[in-house]
Image (tube, rainbow, N blue to C red):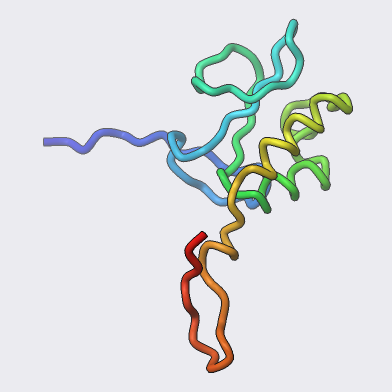
Length: 109
């Protein structure tokens, strides 16, 4: 039996390839501007970001998202995307921090 094809997408922030279902899609629509596409099916030009805060920060600060969507972001759109990105967990926080002995312990928040 053949394995089902899993679509891959590249993160605009970190440039890593991941399965499409693991990514967050940002879409530029002709009438509603730039917004987060919850369903992944909205019509318009799309770009994908990992669900990690540093990817969102990098994509917005270095204007990678604007380049991928071929448009400029208004202040309201940028703030909405930053707010969504800030709510995400940082991957370096999730991995844990070294204690005084140098071993890594995972933090529970």
